[in-house]
Each structure stands twice: as structure tokens, then as C-alpha cells.
Length: 241
Image (cartoon, rainbow, N blue to C red; front, top):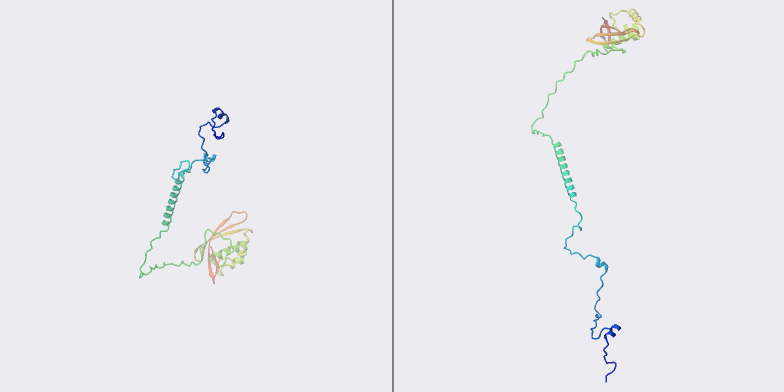
């Protein structure tokens, strides 16, 4: 006699569906092995990322930096200008430093000597020639004939002394005595000025133009010829004509 627990019972499909079981005779789903690895779920970041590019895969134009060909053209133009500038400077400096050719002389050649120019010493004049345009009013001196004539006229018009005038004349002069000279000086108004132009004619002889300016009167001129003499290194007036 069979045991009640080991007896197989066939259930109605409707009862199986109500209880949620599988119908009788249907194969059961195989369970995964206990030691098999579980497949990891893909993360959202992995799904969103792009697949890696192969090493030899060519880059797209978007990945390469933009090229700038104008920089190369600019650099080439700059190099050309610098080369032209260097060439110009070399031409200029090489032309300025060209030395003149030097003629070498032999060891036995003697130096060429130039004859010394003949120098003729200037003729020594007895006294310097006065400038005809110069009009003297100075004190004068007895160092030259022209100097003693200027001193003679200064004593007559400025000092107004006959003795001073007579002291500038030679001892045997043809001039009048001191009293007559003083009378002539007194006839000239006080304040009269003078100017004398002296031009040498020959040694000791001068052409003189005496300008006399009296107060309130137009200037008067007196042409004269005065002869002077050198006595012991001092010059004196000898005659007036």
C-alpha cells in the first residue's frame, strides 16, 4: 500500500493559475550557477562617452589647430629686408675703406728733395706809409715823420702853445719865431678842433690835408706839404709849404 505523502496529485490548471504556480508538466527555469560572475551594469557615463580612437586613426580637421600661413610670409619678408640691408651696409663700408695705392720706392732710391723757394725779404721802408683815409687827432710822437706832424698840429690846436709847437721844429727851421706862432694860435677861436690826413710822398716828405672845424663855421681844409728830419733818432718838422 502506497503512502499518501508520496502519491502525485494532478491539479487543475485554474487552481495553478490562482495559486501562481507553474502548470504541471512545464519546465522550470534554470537558476544561475552559484559561482558564475554577474555581468556589471553599464553606467550612464560609460554609455555617454565616445569609444576610444585607434592610434593610427587620422584626426579630423576639427581636432587640428588652425594654420596661419601669413606668419610664414611675414617672416620670409622680414628675412629678405634684413638681407638687403646687410648687403647695402657691406657695399657702403667696403667702398669707403678702399685705400689709395701706395707707390713703393726701391731701397736704393734717394728721397726727392724739393728746392727751397727763394724768399725775397721785403724792402725795409724808412717809415710806414700812412693810410690816406685816416684822419688823425691824437697826440702824435717823434718816432716817425708822420708822428711828429700829428704832434705839431695837436700842440697848435689843442695845447695852444707856441713853445710846444716850436719845440717840435728843427733848430734851423724856416718856421716863424714863437711870438708870431702864438699870435696865430690866439686868432683861432677856443673850442676849434682839427683833423689831419698824412700821406708819405718820399722819405721825410708828406702830403698833408689839415681840416679845421671852428665853432659855428663850416669846416675848412688846408692842403700842405711838410718836410721832416730825423735828428739823433727823433723826428722834427723842418718846413711847411
